Length: 253
Image 1 (spheres, one colour):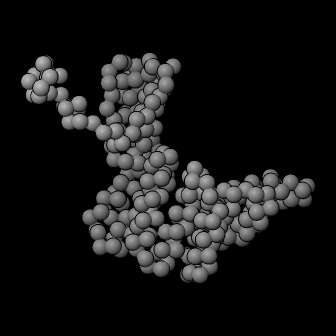
Image 2: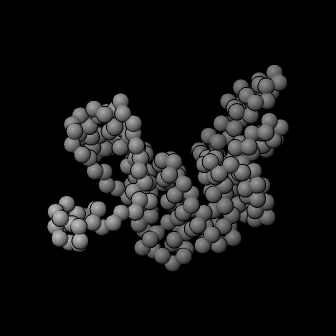
Image 3: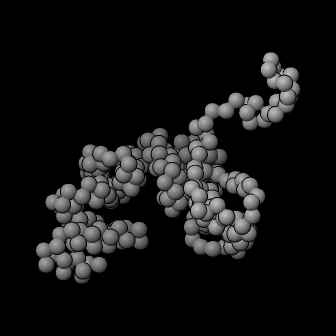
């Protein structure tokens, strides 16, 4: 990618150069090769500013904030976070938002502000759940566990850490249990039986439901998601009633 980016720069193709360098820096970041990534991001930021690529600018400032926080440079880290937040104008840009929350968490940890670290991790986890980014759910859940530990909530930290490890194991590969579940779901999808999926938030229930729908007899129809926690129901609507329970209840339901 670096060689391709250099060639793009030589040919006067700043957009391609920015894309190549951005991908290379992000891969190095994910591999833990921070120093190499830190050398690339200033160039990515410069190109993104010239081209007006808002999301890339947000990601670059966020990375530089995390890098500065890891090296103990608090003022620089806070400055980079402020710049990232200023650029993160579009509330629908969840990728940029996740990067900003990661950077905010890193700065809060450096300041030992564990309440703020918890808030950033919790917001990141909820956003990742909402967009079904399971690796990021596991990441922010782990960060939340560490913050819970520092806030004196060992039980909550243990639960969050356990769920994060379960999700990481799920993301890593196809275990024997997972293969069995997938085969069972394939068989159920071919029937007209109602299917109830139960699991903790962030475990990918929506993704599983979509796969079942796509393999079912109803795959030509729409896949409809209803946020049940936002729907208000009277208890009688959920559990029914007996005849004579109130005026007008002529028969049970």
